[in-house]
Length: 218
Image 1 (tube, rainbow, N blue to C red):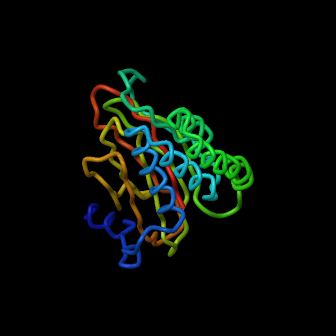
Image 2 (cartoon, rainbow, N blue to C red; image 1 turned 30 degrees about the vertical axis):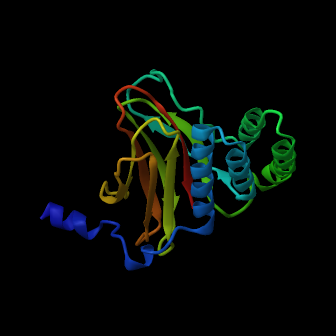
């Protein structure tokens, strides 16, 4: 009877949630894909484009406290990936070497990063983001508020070294959405039945190395 009663109060997903991610979420996912390609292939243009997209996407800080499971920030990182557009531009210049055409292109995007980045950071509306890391064989949790009958989105992208999984729980502890594939790029969406707090749980499946990540909510 208790289980039945609790299930009645679960935040179930609705058909309305089965639609594409918001433009902002898609933009950030695209940027992260370009960044991963850029660092893996030493592509200056890919990094520059990733920095441009991130700078043009309005975000606010996700101002909530992170709770972490036990673990250490240990292990040898193979990924050079960063989530900072300014650092992406610096790395793009390094990869471009003495290629004047590519350097000129990067210089144009660098202006956008400096202008757009400072202007859009902290803007009202759009997604919220947090940049952090999760220990090997451990997890991070965030508690965030989402509004009733409005599409809720959470996206996580890691630095390429680990398999990350994403779980969303409602205030009663019911699992309402998850993304548990074998990548470090996760996305969950649902339609809350009431306004309240939800727990976002990011799990690092690697037993050897921590993972840097960017967390985005709408």
